Length: 194
Image 1 (cartoon, one colour):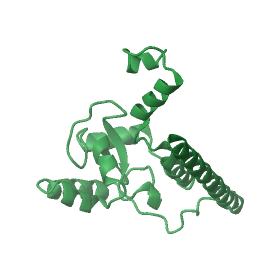
Image 2: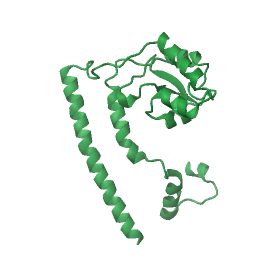
Image 3: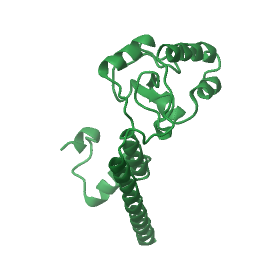
Image 4: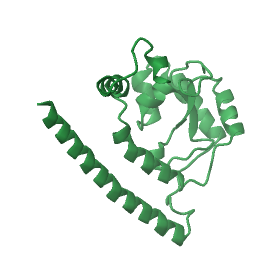
């Protein structure tokens, strides 16, 4: 069984060791709390009419010498821990996956920056190199200008826009039900521990 690769010194888990095993490996993953974020972000991708091709991504990484645009670390080539596409204008603010809005970022910088404005992030986290890195990104933006649309829904027709709004509304109902169930389960489990 695969779990043995993670923890080879333990016999097959009983329900109690499985709970212990899950607590160790799942602690802090926050999949439940990130579920809403992922649905909302996925829906925002439907509003984007520009996409990032593989050739664009290669060009962007080449422009930044296969380094993180923020800290300058080299790309490891690992898609989970190496250089990843990062939005200068965050996706949460309807920034698109396209030339002019995507820069290479190591996973640490991508996670740490979140939706902070990129200049402020560089100035606060990498004070010694901030000026050089800001100029490099500004030159990139001159080469590949990008601006946000005033209306993120402009590329949807009326029927698509109505359906988009209905799906978000339906999701909000499901999300609220899921949160109530989570809280109910948590309360019951806390009572059982006493």
